[in-house]
Image 1 (cartoon, rainbow, N blue to C red):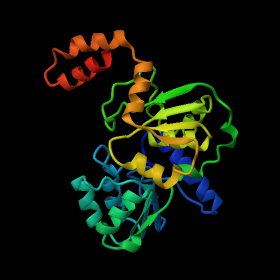
Image 2 (cartoon, rainbow, N blue to C red):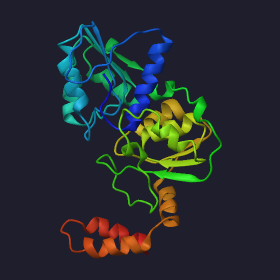
Image 3 (tube, one colour):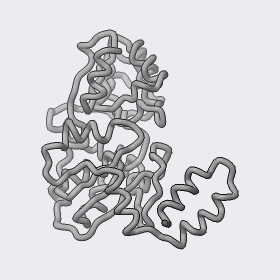
Length: 272
């Protein structure tokens, strides 16, 4: 059961397909709320266990009662969010969870009733064979979030939230776009992973919870082309590509909007 999401989820699904084929495991694809006949259901976990997107917990709880075994592919968990903590503390015995980084893994080992049901492995997107997409590339691309998982940064005038430009059915869209560039600036996990496995220079910036930097520590730290960047680094990108005229127009509007003063002050600082 794939995750209904963006083309970052598509890259995960393609990685799962590759892994299953490599292991000689046949499968049938299901769409929620479809019920199959096999004894084991594999659910693509990804980023659906956090404050912004928590429907993964509901899917697991529902299908745990329909199948002999349910397995969640490598995912991250925002355990400070009460509904996710409750879900993990009440996890059915027939559910196996794979975490894609150590922060989630350590937290789940203190929450899940059966610790033997919790495992650690790399994000499934790393299983993709990207040989046909490997090329030198030129210039850089900014791929910062514009959805509800954003940390609320001002955005460079040229920003392409390419994960959100496609659906999970477009499994190679990230590769098709990123192959053309030399450097990728992003706070999107699967944009970072796609850039890394393509051999690009990847500059990673913080997202709304721990997953991005935690996956870096577990899976990307040894890659010399990938680096964690600070908010000061982000400000340098913003200043170099800041559309002053656009944000001056925004500022006039924001000053009339109740509750918008923090953003207005940030724009004033950026404008100098």
